[in-house]
Image 1 (tube, rainbow, N blue to C red):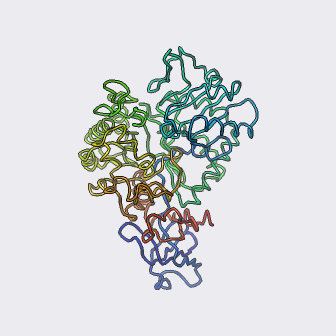
Image 2: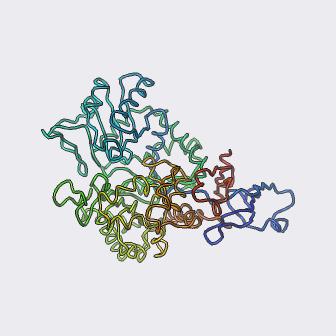
Image 3: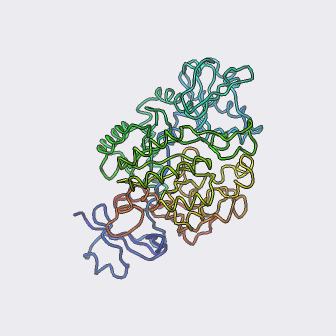
Length: 541
């Protein structure tokens, strides 16, 4: 039993079915004991119970980012690395020079954010520009989507990469016309080698970056997160359980974290972590794998060739052989472990659905959490119906819709580009959506998640007017549901997270604007007043 308190407002989002009601949350310890009418509080709590009335502020369940890379988000928010997209290769090198001037020495210069497809001109960079600026210091720049590295000659030497080096499975090196390395490293190869760069970072600096990350998340009303593996190579997934172990032991994890280490066909690690992290703050619901890359780099796996093929028959390729992926998922299902698979291209999507359908027939549901496919950019209406039949969660990131609205048609052609990120179609079919950001591929901004889902417009500019593929826009109550209850269902915690009801954990955010009635194009201006985790205010404006 804990002490009683009350938080109330004229505008409370209890769940999608009660999106805007006048209500009081009666909190006992870390749990909501009751949801009452403010007029009847005297019949529910003793006289003298502390009451905090937020008036016309908007209260809703704490947001749950269903897909983030916490290490990378923490790192690239910190002063340990540069975060910069740039307008061109030359512009990125200029900003790296400025960063290096503030970080003298001979250690790695690390950055993230460039997207060469959006540069002017839109051509991949090479090590030559980095070599000119940094002939004696290793440099590593991560592309904004985290699928590509750009490294100088000194960096290649530090990593032990030569023209004769064979890249890890699932990755490849760019080469010039003479067969020499350009310094651009893709997919699993980039993830493997960047882990060696990260090993040089100061431990205390990384811990501080995590602490700052938690506060930044809470300041937006994000009370839960899924920390997703970022590499299919054994031992390199960037889900650093040792960091969580240290911070948890020090009582320095103020939000709920759900770890998804890699699934590479062995389960000792995930099962040992599941046994270790069983508390309310850190849990391990399942595993993650990669099935393909991204369509803008032609590494997403398609049924039919790209509209602008790099070579005849260019359909991308799987990062893991389909039969190997099947063996991973089936063994996880046999053990009752949930699996989440990165799928971008339509062939990766449909193949993953078939595998999950087989696993469902053979072993039923996972014992904890839900199976899901991640990102799911390019698919068909038949895929949506197939997902609904097996209760497969669509873990999707609304900001991805508007990274570059011209890219899908350019790479996939108008027919395939006409049905992408189909949020409204998921809703009609009864597919559970779980919203997230995939940060740092896009900003870890809660308001951008919601605004992109309901407008399908670029934040700040509100373009294209009316939204890209506007028929797939969804209502704000449905968007909030996907960003709260949907994510809670995905991690197997719908019984205690995701809605505001008696018996649920008292995790909620107080905002200065009623999201349900707000102008969708002004959602970016909404600010957090307070964030509660377990009934306690953990952040206040």
